[in-house]
Length: 335
Image 1: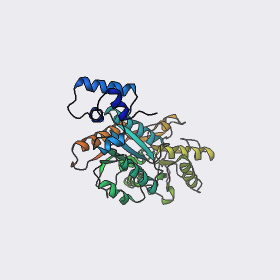
Image 2 (image 1 turned 30 degrees about the vertical axis):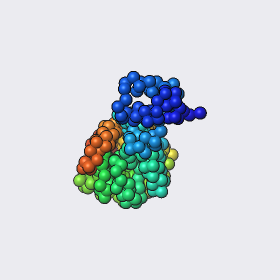
Image 3 (image 1 turned 45 degrees about the vertical axis):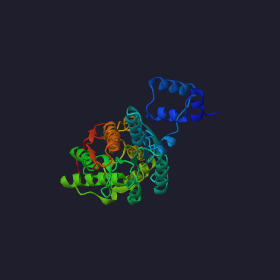
Image 4 (image 1 turned 120 degrees about the horizontal axis):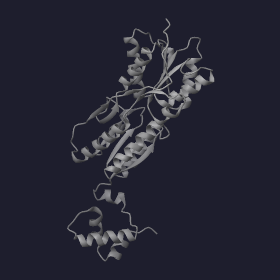
């Protein structure tokens, strides 16, 4: 049976109030008594209740993390980096995968709020971002991770998606590609990456083709179906920019099914520089996000907000970087 605070008090020969003060590091307790109570707690394997601590107004030393899908390598790597940064600050993280469903996300937010987490990291997508307003009105610090929603007054840590999209298309154009398709994930990040790519085409006097731009869900299967639709047309692009690495792998699969060689028949560039981009063949050319730096900044932002609740909302925008792989090659442009 799990030990209780009453068991600790009885075994240590002290009051429940004394045990509580030791647990919460409050009150005027002698070092000898404190060490004795801690020793008994260790013997009984007593674990203080985080909820109980929260009800007394103490920190629970936990952050909540809402992810779109932990199966997505980007979110898996982000979650690990966030967890490492939190642990370094003696915090733990409660992770929830929402599948970008509004109702599910709201249920998780309510759950985390009831557990009295000390801060929330939101790295999922909402169909209606105004649903977040009631939670932003609470005293719980909130950080948007890898999302930039201008309509919300909230701390934001993200990469410059627009510039990342621009870099991807600029690189393809530099390598002679004038017929370029885009497979994007639905949501603000995908929209920013598309706009950046379109601007790069415009700056190069290349007309983008609406039929070569498709919005899908974020999965390998969706990248595959989106690419098949594009590559099955009478005239097909010579290169495809996939707005994340999972989609890019789907594009690779579609190319293989159609008998197209990558990169000689079709160049492919991804986004995120996850482990997935490094293990597929050929190794993906991709746009890198500095996940570790973003995670560090996110946790530090939550900690600073806890010390200064009235601090102004911060927006940190990290710069993307092109990582050259073997999935792209230069061609002689055709009109």
